[in-house]
Length: 239
Image 1 (cartoon, rainbow, N blue to C red):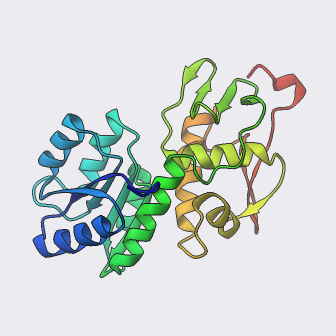
Image 2: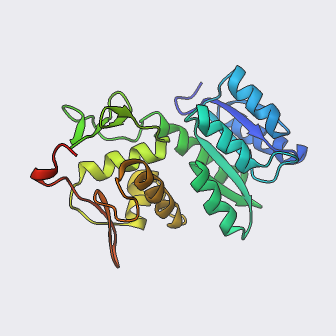
């Protein structure tokens, strides 16, 4: 099996879409299983955890957002969400809920396969630069890239793979401002994409690592540019 391949769970109630997606992903080397509804997806994710989930937003009964929420309660499995063309708010809510990426319908199956490959490689650390000599530390915040673990004041942080990579990248480049497009390219490995993806992930990170997410101290906004990581001042080292 190719080194980027993995076990993919496809959740879509349209058998034609599911069959096309499964065929392209299998052609890319993945082991693919398809289910048609949210409860079945949650059962399979628990019984035989996949490496990645391709999740349709519009599902009967339990929609994709609720499935993603429930997955996130117990798992950091990467999720690529399928959304309707033009449903920007749905895409943003999906990212807020914990999706790692999204593809809009109608979509190119090849594009989806490339997105799945990118998300899997990122989740496995294949695109992460060489591991530093030790964990990244900033006061009570510790990010261990080698172990793919993060903690705040001794308590573990539940981060998705994208959140982890974004935080590690920013901490590696303290006080350097990056545009959203630069972060998409450097962290997501995208040469194109919706920069609101970065905005949503920054918001989610702030909720997890900032004392006051409405007045962030670590990940600060650089107006007219993007974002910058601000290390703790000497007097704040233990905060």
